[in-house]
Image 1 (tube, rainbow, N blue to C red):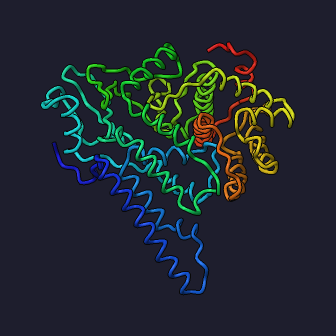
Image 2 (tube, one colour):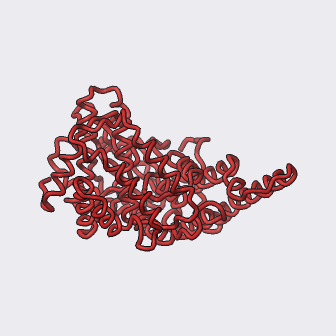
Image 3 (cartoon, helix red, strand yellow):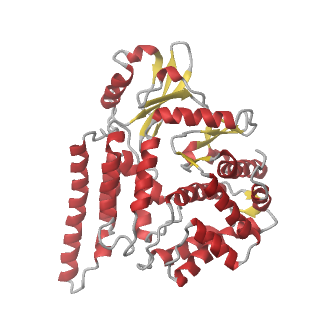
Length: 444
């Protein structure tokens, strides 16, 4: 297999990964100490939060986690999206750098993984196998291959050691996040981190993804809007997922398409989120735009990556249906009751914090209440919500963390908003919401 100087081997053993975390932590500690001495020398009192969040320390953390990949990088990507978890702006910036920062493993390590999964001599099963991946993410990388009988495939290969290191990686990232000055006092991330571990274990189970892909294929069978790859089950293992290669273009390729095309695509993806929440009982919660592509030949949206599929309980769907109803027409008291039931804040959350959170929610729901199509491209809603979020994120007394299921659902919703904004779409949202909130048995 040819050499590739751009790859970086994934640390596989627990000791190797712990050593890498230790190196990140010691590098940050050294930077803090040096910065503190400089502050003292200039007659200033060192500020620990500012010392921790210097550009140099940010680079140490993001580069270190990107090299580790696996749960370490995935957790950072999860928390960096618009989840509804309010973090200080500097922490959000650190996590945001991880979204598109993944390195692929070198060919020798790839060959070791595939030898273990398919057996030595596996290369002979293909007419072509591209050693350099065309995509690399936090848990695995994707290669294009053609079988001897001419089937064009996408082969997703999981990084070695990812599944075994999930719990320790999450714990180690949590330790870094709990450094003094990074998070508000009293903020308990334990429930969120426990849910992250559960989701990461599920996402690293490629045989489970096989089932998710088959299920969504059935749910969307015959759709004139969506296309999904089909499985090549003979090559699927717990660490390798093989499926048809979907010849398609990035969703970004539509940014200059006619307005009607952009509106149609955005409306279809927003409607899919509503169907997942209120009809399917399952949601693909990773909103990375790379998971959504466009087939210019059929004008269908290609859906990829069903590792992050989470169940939506009837109770959660009912709570969000009730929240959507009051968001459309209810008053302040009803809205607050619905938000309390879902867990946006708790009974012991300070009243002024409840007011701030509810004001953010009210602003976010404005596009749903208007009768005319909402212009995502011209709206400054994201900027206004960000400014409101900064006020909360910098309040060191706000420690409430919403339920994990709600946060990951918000991650998907936030991602779809960013998608529609990028496409500068205009979508009438109110009729869509009303269709799913008027009757629990809304049609597909």
